[in-house]
Amino acid sequence: MIELKNDDLRVKVNEHGAELSSVQSVDDKIEYMWQADPKFWGRHAPVLFPIVGRLKDDQYTVNGKTYHMTQHGFARDMDFMVIEHEDDHAVFQLNATDETREKYPFDFDLRVSFTLEAHTLSVHYTVTNPSSDVTLPFSIGGHPAFNVPLEPGQGDFSDYFVTVAPKKAYPQIPLVGPYNDVKHEKTLNLTTPMTLDHDLFDRDALILDLDHVETTLMLSTQLNDHGVALTLQNAPYVGIWSPYPKRAPFACLEPWWGIADNVDSDGQFTHKMDLQTAGPKKSFNAGFQIRFF
Image (cartoon, rainbow, N blue to C red):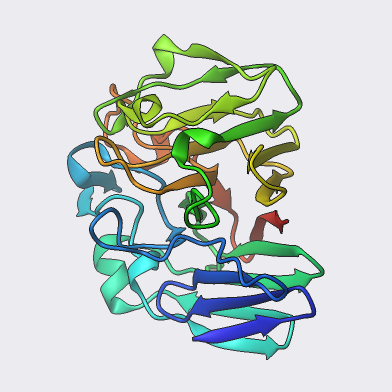
């Protein structure tokens, strides 16, 4: 476990999955991150790579060959190498292996960096294509889960709300089972805060189409002054999720550069909706910030 610290926060990141596992305030010891109780969901904040969501029938085709990969890809279940570590900064690296090539026939260099400044943790993804002649296709995303309520005994799930800026009605991409149904896009009015309710997630995550516009989602309550604010500069989507029908005491705010297969997907990986690419010897960069208050 790698630790970052400053005068405001103590952060822990697990080398397994480069997974953010704990963010605790120094002053009042509030734990912001969900602590992975397997009764509800045994993860904290997995890195989603090289896919976000589910593939149709958990498989896809590249150059006529079929590959199998489960939901959200394999990075979350692999050990990363720590290549930089200071008090307020760490970088985790994952490279292609024979094991990954059986599921995903591409070479890659994935780096996840965490930088702590005052009450803000910045998370940055760099996906580099080491090939000199093949374009690297992929999706990537985050899945941080936050305790709701943040302080035990102070309110419950329905005492929290999500406020989105800019305030507007957002295109919402529905899910049919685990697959996106963009042809039947809905609208979610977020001109006012959305009060959390477990029934919001009866059809899985709420997926907002951000159109790469800088957006901030704040998870907070009127019962106290504590919460989190997640800011994305260039993400196409953000998911809001809590497991249903479980009444889990956490909510996820998920920045995505990719999305689950479409209900009409033909299985060709290069046809995948909102697929990112890195050309030969090129890199893709993305990230987000979480402010803890």
